[in-house]
Length: 235
Image (cartoon, rainbow, N blue to C red):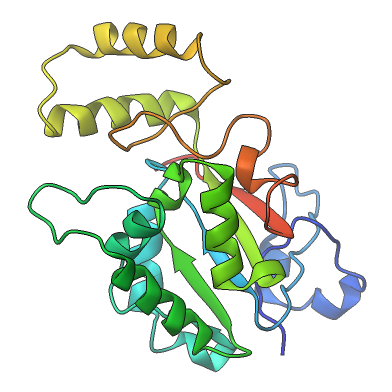
């Protein structure tokens, strides 16, 4: 059985075979030019959605969790027991917990890994924007190896920067920032000039484990064997 998830590394071999599928019929541009239908990922793929922050992750995680009981009929499992396995991912990335939340421990991460392993040959979906805050290559390599090595397919959601920045500022304000948007924006953009190109995150550290060059540590030079991007324009 194959899982109907987008794979950016290959094309559908037989367009006629998918021509009648509703998803295939909808794949057109504004000029009605047909687009290539997505290629199913192999059964047993570990689809790892790493965010990053402020790209619609909460909505994606909510939709996945709401469909948790229906997904196995399509060969897909959502192994986490909550909408967002945040404590597990924070522990894996050596990040502290949120104020007032349970302290992340290695036990949280080990339980999530066990839940992923228990899905066997089914495709499993793990989603957390905090994966994008992994601090270094060694952490990323460990995460990918524990989740399945070459079975891991990384999914990155993209959002226009002009929408990420106001949303990011609002998050900082909710967390206690007392600075107007224009002042904050100038500060952030000046700060980025001394660092790697375009690193935007929603975490407290202000850095992420991916960059504008194509998912940096998570990309072709990293541990995962494959990765995809998908865009959001109105989130």
